[in-house]
Image 1 (tube, rainbow, N blue to C red):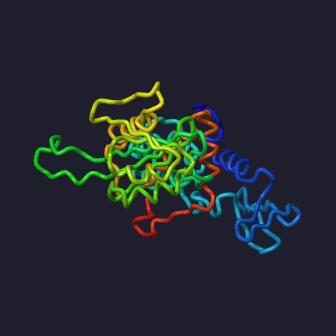
Image 2: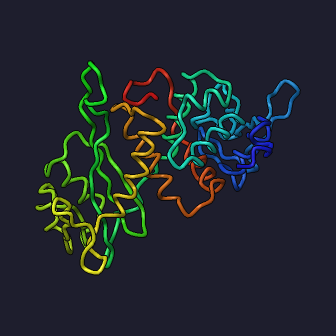
Image 3: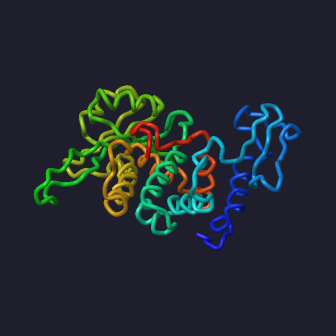
Length: 305
């Protein structure tokens, strides 16, 4: 990461960088959607802060941060961009404790900031995974501590995460309440094309839903079977995705609250799905996702970071 880049030290340079990413064709009014550059004026009075525009259609002022996760934040934009870069450059994540020390902000602010960035990393599905001649692997893992590592206090029940990973493609992971056929079927058939070849382990939760796809192969891990049929039958792609996910749990985050587990899933999905990009390109894509995802401390606990 080029920490000498002015966008990480100068709030005005950071704002200009956001404007270039969010407004590639000029300012757009977040209030009414007006993008006619003749109907938008940049305010330049001595008492006006930099970056303020006024829409002649709705007569409302705005900046590039309105309607984004940056709106009304007291944290300077250059620190926001630094946080985006650190989280997108860390293969196994970046802890809020480390961020609060690096940026010189409180831990509470760093924790809330990081979850807002994870909201920006969430991407809307662009159709189902797989298709004809494609293979999608389905697997599950469990997040949580082990009782043998506790002296007295009882460990909380583990939380289940299911991942759907297309070979040479994208991944989608989900927190589910229970790993059973009733829970997993709607998730799988919604996110995987029926023309796909489904690859799973021997768990019976996949037996029924597997019949709904073009093909279904099973790898019997309990019989120490991992790769067969000339390298075709395996679930190593999903296992590799989970290996990074679990290293993030164990080595970086240590604990993931069930209320926010879906956000952590979105974070690891985003980095996996943009693995062919450079850290700078990945960061830019995450920043573009910041629009329309404003969160406040007053929102319900299930939404607030």
